[in-house]
Image 1 (cartoon, rainbow, N blue to C red):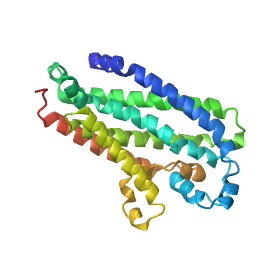
Image 2: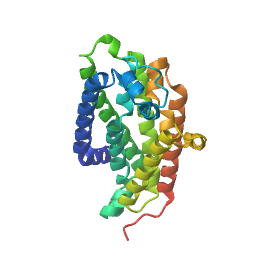
Image 3: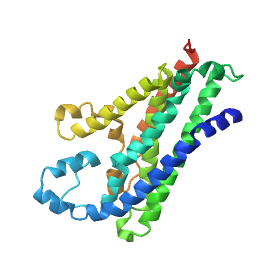
Length: 270
């Protein structure tokens, strides 16, 4: 297993490092700019009423008549750039095996190693979780450094921040578990990435449309974004136990299903 982990490290170390640094820079920039940009958002609501529904859709809750200084930081955690960087890593990593190995013609050599498919799958999973933790921690480091320059009243509490980070990690697990399932069911990496991109796009759009269209609300539970509400966590100060439980449960189901398919399917480069 050490040899496999070393192989994974050598293959993904630079993309993971660059994505982590990129996420840190983006989060630092957003942490610094969002309070200034959104400080007078209530005036924007008064002049441009159509903006408020858009903000509501993004946050997943009604922002009310005015934002608190802490609530402006909720945009940081749902910003499309932040989510795109995290999901880009998952699509890159989770599509490597077996879809990527089949594309490269190296899957026969990999499966010919004296390790079981389950051990190979578990090793890939360890690399996925550790690399994700690294990226999220580096990204949070950028946010923490930038937030240290803000006034205390403008920073969410430590417990609320921990709740948001836990929720973000849970959605990382859910998306990655599904990506493993799609990859284990595919013979081409491009196809696996395309399917996952379409699923994430539809999930994001469904969560957005559900704020305006009642029929969409009845199926909004199908969107992973339905269980990721940083603004609610910051506002209530409560740990999102239910949402994290649902996301982790979905991640477990997807991951196990992917492992079963990988264990039983016929895989070759011919």
